[in-house]
Image (tube, rainbow, N blue to C red):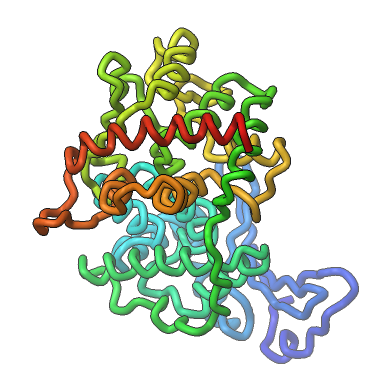
Length: 396
């Protein structure tokens, strides 16, 4: 018996879902939650399939019958209505200026060459893990501040508020790129200013007390984990580069004969090539490691595959195994350690220290940093620093 609006309106939810049949494959599915969903059952290619036609009352009885009749006309022409619906949706998304996911990856590919490799990796990971699973399929013009906030709240709920703020920044960059290329009208991330609690201000964990530095160096000497990780742990304090620069080191950049590590611009935060003079102790560590990894690309390859550099968590996990938690020391902490002790204990020239840290500090003549700035002074300082660490290891 055909349905009527009165019969549909009077249909009440039951313990289990049930159907109200209209005819020619059309029926209304009433769920225990009270939803009333239009469905069209049909067969094509010997298989039974279902086509969702919307919900009542958003889609009226008359409109549901019209959609059913249109689907039946497609079937007479051997067209699958479900496939046709999916194709129309994709075409609609194209007309609306693409999805957030398409534009986000287009933005990433266009700009990643201007970033340090470590920054590019982090940005891609934030896109793939935090944004695309929930927003990637949506037309970018239709995404609201509420949609984005729900994603950020999910991150906040995991207790990583700072990451939520950084993901909001990445989303904003994608939206502004879409605006610039004519595929969006506004940036909803701007509406969320103040919607998240401010991240707790914190400094990267670092040890700056000479006695504690000596204890850490001795702990590293006693590390019994993987040899590659042990070498990374031992080299880190001698070169005090950023963790991403250390783990992405390549043998083609290392000149052991002339005791220098030449880091290309694309790997540096300031997008300038950088020279790291290698102390005698640093050369010894690398020379010992080279027979193991020197035939490959990476100085510190992944423990699982020689095709990838070492994981960013490898050094952190090793520090934890040595008993140093995240509040005491992190991979980035050696930079703060070196900056502090070179200045306070060894009384090195602050400009030379900053140059070795690859900070954008002009020299006394107003010239911006370049890779050879204070090179002679830095070479002497790096050997003096390595000798000082040896002294701390022995005497503190």
